[in-house]
Length: 101
Length: 117
Image (cartoon, rainbow over all chains, first blue to last red; front, top):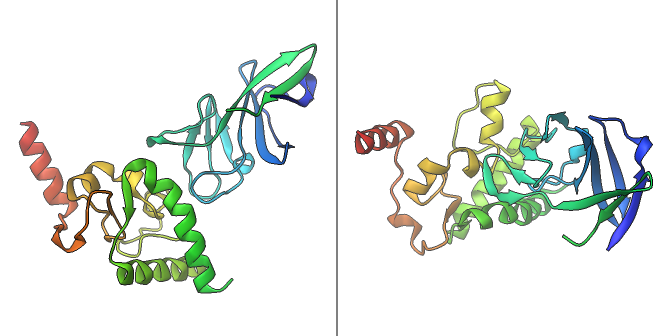
């Protein structure tokens, strides 16, 4: 099911925004024109990824430097571990997140 | 937060990480309790639950790879032993952790390189 997240113009390219959607802590990221939504909790120790640094499509957890691909949610050192990733779409200037993974 | 409560949180959080990697907590519950307690102490002292059995250098890039569970950063080595360095985690098919042999990283790398030659 799709839920409204933000207006498209609220986030610049390379920007990230923590959101609460349907009770889930999400992190919305705009990168190279696309929007990516992942859980805002690192699967290691629940640290907020929104406070991490973003380089290309890789976000680094601020607590222990775990690296995740924002497109798939995969942890780069062990692909079996993933931060939940959600689909996004932009319709008429509004960004929506699909909460069904 | 008290030690027991934090140990329980570690169990829950770390279980999530080790399970998809094919590991479980060691069946040696006394060892598990001891090591988790050490990790709680390390977190209080140094800010993160570092592996109690490996030395820190003070260099972030190195030390972050020793935060428990450190399996993703030492996978090949640990898979060869079927356990992590401390023995806190073992492969899911291991029933008798005492039967596992600890192999130093140097030995492991030498034997791996020999096998590849």
